[in-house]
Amino acid sequence: MREEMYSVEQVADLLGLHVRTVRGYIRTGRLAAVRIGKQYRIARADLDALTGRSQPVPTRAGGASVEVSSIVQIDGVDRALADRLGTLVLAGANTGHDPARPLRVQTVHDEERDRMKIVILGDAAATADLLRLLDAVLDGDNGLLAGEVDHA
Image: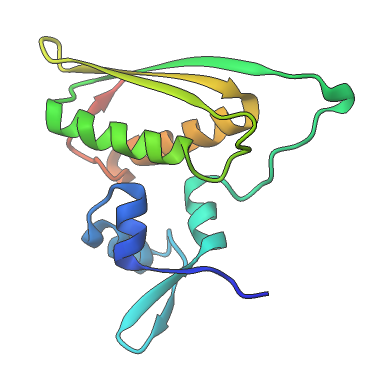
């Protein structure tokens, strides 16, 4: 079986990040990559591990369905940052989940208060994956947005 591989540029596009950020993740070991010549290649499994999608969604006994509603509020977010976060969250919601049970995501930015709200509705495991991705992005000094946002 052939593993899907991505370039640094492709990973940056998929996650809505700057190429330098992805290279920094590779240098610090946060994202595993293979160097081929002068370029890095990232395996799909390693990208999934970074974004928290490495475990498959479990099947519930008896066909029981669980839906989760989550609201994430992030303060100190200007319009440009809200657009970047919105793109990242929507990309995460549309990637690697059961198409029969899609996540529904809405983002709202309040320019007067520099506040963003993200509303997520869907399967518990898929919602947890998306929240882990968001947490990784907003993770204090280590996050992709370090110094740009104070999250509540």
